[in-house]
Length: 147
Length: 147
DNA sequence: ATCTAAATAAGAATAATTACCATCTAATAA
DNA sequence: TTATTAGATGGTAATTATTCTTATTTAGAT
Image: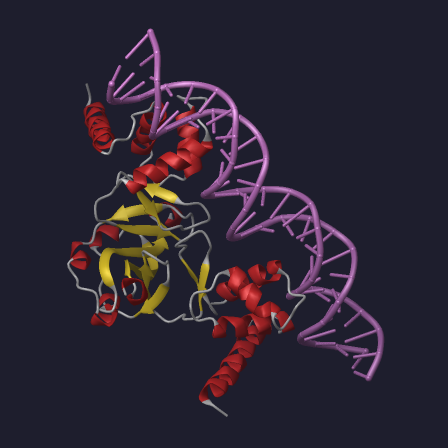
């Protein structure tokens, strides 16, 4: 068995554990949607996920994908990426990371920036409380488009 | 005459100069839309602008507001704010600044962070070129919602 | 004042997302 | 294992944001 399958199994076990601990049912649809999200690490739209899941579950409805993704987001299993074009995109990477967005093709790439993560926000925002997200978006031209 | 009117006059003159230099016509609609944007510094949606302009130009069409805002954006007169909720929002502040977003009421507030602006992105993104935007979004609870 | 390309209004079309409700099913307990 | 039931789903309609189309209007040049 190759590594990707071992990881997949581990991820699916963690997924089921999370759902159970939240009192959420483990349905065929949720399982397939989660698998699709693992497979699509390139910030898919809801439509992308829908099409992927349909390959294995032909009766899946788009609304279920919307609802399920919202549920996953609510329980921290995925992150909603601030809209870049017109469709919302999602990210299985829930660790602290940032985004590169290609001005040309709208591709989104994750990157890490520990030096930034360690910075304290300026005192001018002290009137805001519960700062739980500090996210950087950098726009430029990706290596593909530069060619 | 109070200061706000002096500033308004200056801004409108700058606006007309910009349009002329780009070969764009100075229409009644564009003028009213620009005035509405000056008035609405709280990151309005297209619909917000439309409603404001309608007070003075009852025949304005929503499509004109969309088109005009796109034109203004193209020529650097306003900035598009990365979607936070479902509607796109705009910002008359085209200087280098960042956004605070309230997790509770979705209010967007501008802030400045020179220490961040001076930072060089991590070398892990060196394969991207033409980095022209480096923007931070901080999420928290605004002073109003904290009360 | 006239002309013409650019801009607009009105409404239709499209795209993304959400709401509704009848039906189905996962999880629990008998 | 089966019955029960609240939670989840499918299909479709509705809503919301945005863009397109086309006939008409108008800003700015002549």
